[in-house]
Length: 105
Image (tube, rainbow, N blue to C red; front, side):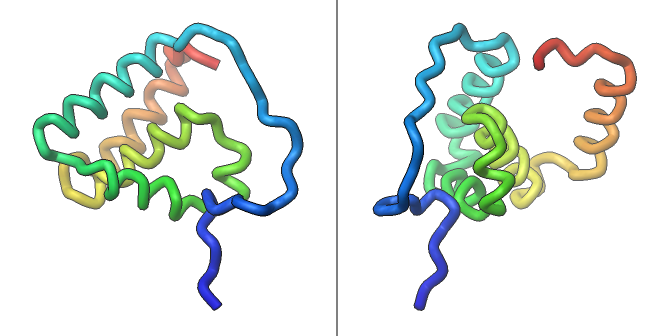
């Protein structure tokens, strides 16, 4: 038997679909624009990105946001491809959180 992917929820019982009506945050717009540019330039391919999201642990996927999953998947893919360095990302994230300049909740 093949294990189901995190995103394979067809036929599973589920509650109501959340329908949140809100404007995109600035970082969300920037992240989508950066991802679109990376696709146009041929750095990433949609199928590669989809794999990184589908491989997320089920509990993490379920408790993350749409944009959070996209960002995490994109970062993971860029690290895999050697475009960015995991230690650099971790250090920069820590710096932002410690300085209190995080502009979203």
